[in-house]
Amino acid sequence: MTNTQIISGKDIATHLLETKLVPRVNTLKEKGITPKLVVILVGDHPASASYVRQKEKFADKCGIIAETWRYEAEVTEKKILEEIERINKDKEIHGVIVQLPLPDHISIQKVLNTIHPSKDVDGFTPNNIGELFLGEPTLQCCTPKGIITMIKESGHELSGKNVTVIGRSNIVGKPVAMLALNESATVTICHSRTKNLNEHLEKSDIIIVAVGIPEFLKGDQIPAGAVVIDVGIHRKDDGKLCGDVEFESAVEVAGAISPVPGGVGPMTVYSLIENTIESAERN
Ligand code: GUN
Image (cartoon, rainbow, N blue to C red; front, side):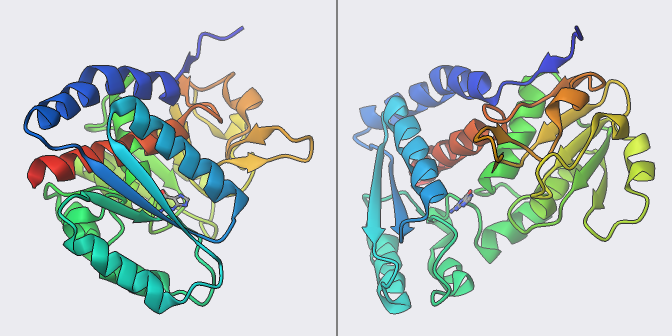
């Protein structure tokens, strides 16, 4: 038995939905505004379909509108860009996301460059990423924003702490490192080419793991009492879900750990809905 704190993103998201988001939506509705999100879903990627359902469900609980616009995998890039242009002009729509991955014939960069930054509730456009790096208020990428929220909501400070991020993707590793830095943490970014990873981990107070490798980080690499945030999600051969952290060994040494499922995933969805409400408030 350990008394490691389990950081339930699911419980935090539910609590914040009730106490923070629903009152904001009610205030908007009193002014005649119902926040509306459009999700563009191309093709039939099974994981995407499941993520989109979670987003729709959370939006519904919050009292906002979420519409999924579905397109066949063969849809042209031109058609998707036209749809985004149409959404950019539609005053009733406050946020749009294009669910990734996209088929190879559609350029993610072109798609992101077409979304108006004020409706970019995923926080993926160059403009919003730039604002995030500058520490200016903006629509922040959902997973990084959700991670910072869950660390704070579970009672952990970031200021002055040694935060190690494992992974350097544009949608998690890089932006979460920057958000932690903006919270006055001392940040180290490690990745697949990092030498002596364990030496970097030794002094860590908080470890954020987003490498995309099942059960990559083991308990014996974690300093006693560290906070461990697991961003990965994978399906094992036995059908069970796991993260980028080997939970059974990590839970024995960590001071706090986020589980998979029920950790970062619900916080990503929470941040998306929060961003949609923020966008509606700004307009
Ligand atoms: N695919 C996996 N995660 C995400 C996400 O956060 N946003 C979008 N648009 N697609 C994803």
